[in-house]
Amino acid sequence: MSDSVSFKGGAALAFGGALNPASLGPAWFSASATAGVERPETEGKGSAREGDAKSEKKEKGKDDSNIFLDNIGKIFLAAIGGVVLMLIRSSRGNANKTAARDRIESLSVLDPLEIDDLRVANSELTPTVWREIANEAHATFPSGRATYEEFVGVVRQVMMRLKGDAFTVQLGHFLDRVAIGVLENSDSSVLGKGEDNPTLKTDGAYILKTEKALPLSLLFTILLLCLNSNVKDRVKVLFEVMKHYSVEDAEGKVSEEDVVRMVAYLQQTCQLVPDAQIVFSDVKYPVQQYRRGNPRELVAGANKTMVEDGTKDSSDDNAGRYDEAEFHQLLRTKSVCAWGECYVKKRGLD
Image 1: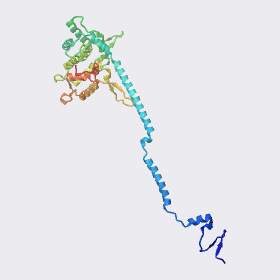
Image 2: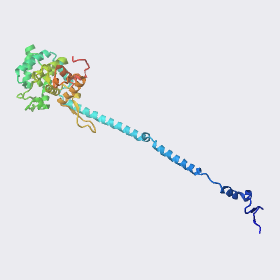
Image 3: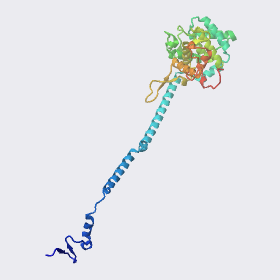
Image 4: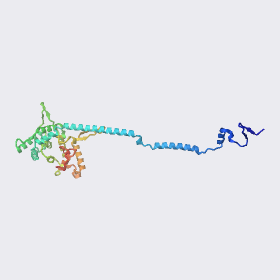
């Protein structure tokens, strides 16, 4: 038996003999060519490393994201919404402040133009005449109290004695109106304990109860409305009245209680501007509310301003005391603003 095997095409392959790859055809060649070839181990690992690198790049991209840029739309809308809410709150707050001013103005029985008319009409009622009236009133009413009717009687008596019967208070019905307003709207701290309000006649005319007395300081503050003088002289005569009835022993000074009382009188007699009397209420949210400040609050605000400006001596020796210059400065602050002086830009107290 022959040891060789015959294949198509005439090729013979002997076991253990040489192999001619060309005689096996393409399929056999591919199989025989790759059968004994080993693949390098790095081929699979390279593909794995490429995948890991891509994953790490994606994760790094997520870590590097900017919160602000990612939410820029939301932040922008929130900012716009905040601005709109602030504008609405500010607008309503201003409306509340205007309403408070209107309420204060409605309580005033005299407007600034009428006060100007009073001073012009009484051009001869100078500080000299005022001091004559003050001396007579102090002597006539040693208790420091009188009725409005009694006080007016002394004023007219002194004026006629000085310049004849024709010399009297002009537009006196304006002062009557202020006195009635004080009696109607004031509390016991202004009127004194046990004071009655005026009664109303059937024909609509008010009468003042003459048996009830008012502080002379209050009555002088009413008369101050028709004093024809500059602001410095007006403050001087007012300070003299305070000092006359003050319990403060220090020479040339009055106590803080005297000042608070006088600011109350000025407030009640329409001599403080409405804006100065507006203070913040305790209601701040959702919208700020406002109210009319009481005299002690106005003085406290003025003191704070004066200490900050260096126009008030805050030392312990001077605590709660005011000289004429400090009293004048207090009246000029925006927290009190008597006669609109806080709007006047000038140096010093002249």
